[in-house]
Image 1 (cartoon, rainbow, N blue to C red):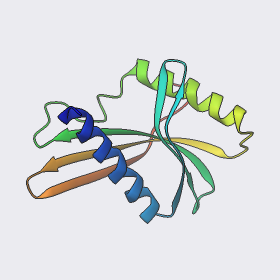
Image 2: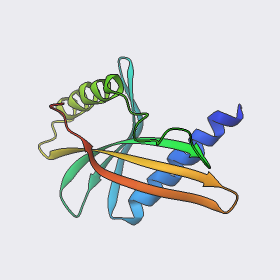
Image 3: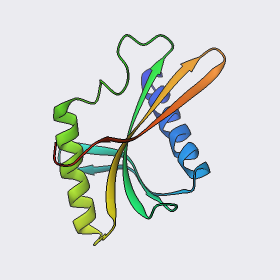
Image 4: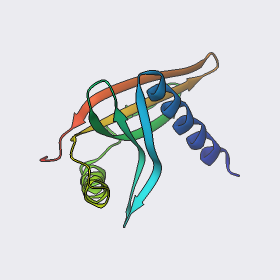
Length: 122
């Protein structure tokens, strides 16, 4: 398997573990709808919310912050996919869109969690 694919798989695994440690229940990983893929769909058990999580991983000293890499086009795809998931699963909880940024260095992983990174009406 290519190094960048393994890197992405490891980053998503670490993001899911990070969320579980923060009292989130992972509902789905890599859920696909048409052209969109949601990296992680979770329930924030503390706030009773569905959380759509985009995971962005970078090696140390990224040229672009991971949050900026979630373009308007990507946000629209995530919103459509989230809507489909919510309808398909008859979910009646408030929905939130988060971004988890992971930076890997020689000393390990740094994780940043940006809650409410964007909104469905953008």
